[in-house]
Length: 70
Image (cartoon, rainbow, N blue to C red):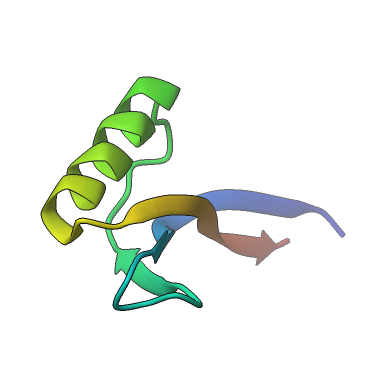
């Protein structure tokens, strides 16, 4: 039996901490491309920090693959 893996989707979960959310709050961004650079990720987290007035403390990349069995 062989398996073929194909990229289906990706999401970013950005965790922000600030005065209103001392324990942190997660912001989910859907429809992320399969290939993204560190510069793109840095730009996104800096933009979210600017908009929310909070500090980014972590990012989770959530990838969904489709596995076909033959």
